[in-house]
Amino acid sequence: MQLTRRAVIGSVALTLLPSSATRAAGGDGFVVLEARPGEIPLLPTPSAPTKIWGFGGDVPGPLLRAKLGEPINVRLANKLDQPTALHWRGMRIANEIDGAAGLVQNFVAPGESREFTFTPPDAGTFFYQPLVQPFSGEQLGRGLQGVVIVDEPKPIFADSELILVLDDWRLDGNGQIVPDFDNPADVLRQGRLGAIGSVNARTKTPPLTFAPGARLRLRLVNAANARIMDLGLIGGALKVIAIDGQFCDPFEPAGRSLPLGPGARCDLLLDLAPLEGQEFRLILRGEAELPDLTLLTIRTEGAAKPPAPPILPQPLNPLLPAEIKLEKSKRLDLVIEGGATRTTPSGFKPTGEALRKVWSINGKSSTGLEGPPLFSVAKGAPVTLGLVNKSLYPQAIHVQGHVVRLLHDLDDGWEPYWRDSVIVPPLKTKHIAFVADNPGRWLIASAIMDHFANGLAAWFEVT
Image 1 (spheres, one colour):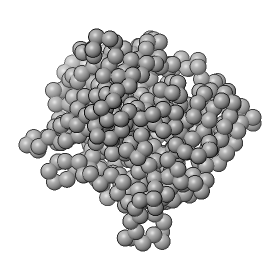
Image 2: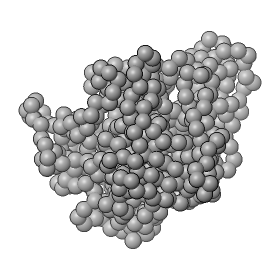
Image 3: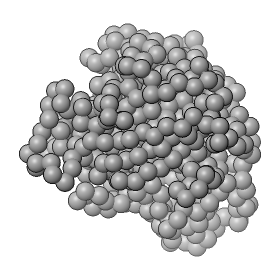
Image 4: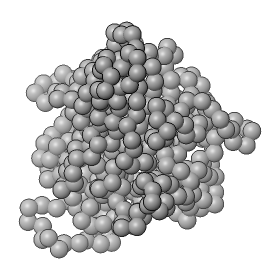
């Protein structure tokens, strides 16, 4: 496994995550992820540095990179005054490593350390983040997160790779993080949104420049606490090649728009225009009175590159089933309720236990760490779940330890890609199916931290 530091790709103004190893930890092969306070130049000068919590005191944390089949060795050191734990988002690894603190493992207390060793079964783009109730939202919102890349055996052709961790921040007039985590107004609605958008924890970066016709591999990661990002992709020719760490048949997003829920990832191949002076722009569409934000601009400059080879489908993951026998599946509806309604008084501000019960699944509010399982199935059993969103707000539901198929609304066919979370619009129902092939106790919960910590969580068991 490689541990990497920041480097520059294409421009000295935008720090991106490189692929060369420059530092090892302790000489024992373990990468140290030290959760501690730090400062970053989130806003451009002359603004003061923003105080954060980060792995290594930085945001994003160290990039972890390994080839498929290589082990990852990590030592988590907790230098915070809160307990913490790690979740390896989208990685189908053993339950005792990826499980939620309090469900299958103990949290890491302040001053303690814990080691993790595992070999990822899949190539792709993944994400590590805290998972310890009720602190996950604050820890993620203050910057505790990072990226894992497991490289495919045969590299995909691209002239350059950009790893783009997208986030939004709620800052005060001094450029510091507003500490109103668990704000009832956020919990009751779509969650904590920030007006400041960033790429790799930097804002308002000058354009990157690449040769006309260059092919770029963009690895997009949504690191926000709550925002379901509606991304506009303007300029160039592009194809989605992977979603949530799993390859799919290449396709162009409908309307050049890409929805990305919290913690979700997407890999794109972008062929820049073959002429000088052309632009590609990555735009975060505004919502809830927030304006559109241009997160990244890429311009063409210099001599044109020869035409890149055609974008071909990657081999399907042989560890995932070619089909799911829906007729034999365990079927269950998950009815999501809660949040503000049309009759909720404008000044309603639940606190304490009332706040923790704002959201529910099948009438029960839970941290996902207690009580009986939502369901229990034997290893290898197919499962079909109806995600019934009866609330007025979109939901992003994450299934831990597995990847799922999104079923078509009108029949039992499915979308031609795997994913580890699904967006469910307000007052709508989406159906997902998967094969429960990873033994253990697994969360199924909101990927929106404010909803997750306040009732919208449960767990299931694979025996």
